[in-house]
Image 1 (cartoon, rainbow, N blue to C red):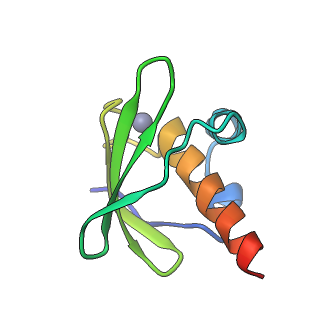
Image 2: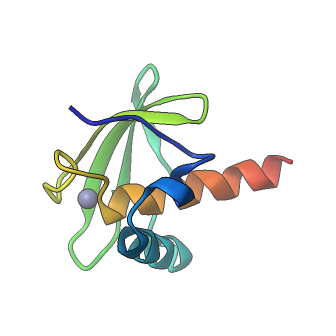
Length: 96
Ligand SMILES: [Zn+2]
């Protein structure tokens, strides 16, 4: 089971190293535009040297049911999910 993470509070909740990597991936423009594959369910590709596909459910600012092909997301939030959270956070700031 993966616990939901919020776009508004993930900076305080995630491991510092994971945040650093996520920020780097996002900052390099490696996060693709998320595609809605089912209602409320999305897929995003993170273009690291090996691309990783991450699927997740989004409801408002909450991300849940995530699964990443890097295989780490069943234990904890992976770098790819952290990159997505930075991407979504940047989108929020644009709308304000
Ligand atoms: Zn991952």
